[in-house]
Length: 216
Image (tube, rainbow, N blue to C red; front, top):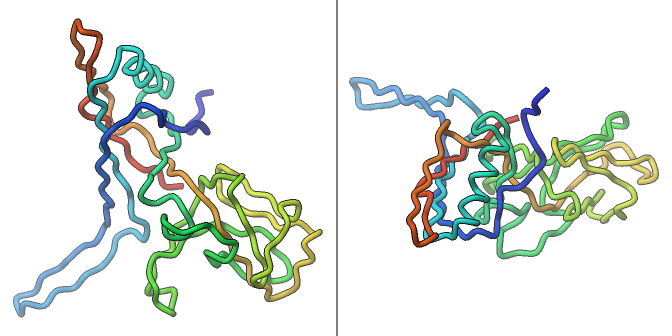
């Protein structure tokens, strides 16, 4: 059975240009009075990337082609490293265990989904809370009530972003759990074709490699 997603990162050492689109699903209804009503059809946004690989050797072009074929084109998802948004904090800052609040211990459930909050409103309903499903496990830091835990007291699933706090952490009811981490984005190829242009000078380009985010 072919996997729907593989825990593999798109080759990062090729050198490429990237454009990113963040797509929102907002419906706007206009009235004769000039007023409008806005509603969102989906809570989560979706990211799209357009890669360009130019002036590359045959070997480098072949690496991209091999990666595309191994994923069966759009069939199998993989990970993409978005250098504009890959930390639980601002990209110029260092990660800390208190970057993102991810839950409060209720005395029963000790598993928490990694999330990232966009916005600075006191009321979370006014912020956008994004589910993070592809964390870099070795980067993860966890704190309970602002006190950082040793890595031996928690575990994270690198394909779901669910953090398990182990009994050795000694959680108490109403404890605030926070996290800091780096992460990647789950994507797939958006098209059923990959066009490669090359010449007899053993160099070429792939002008467009569209990727689209996979929402779990």
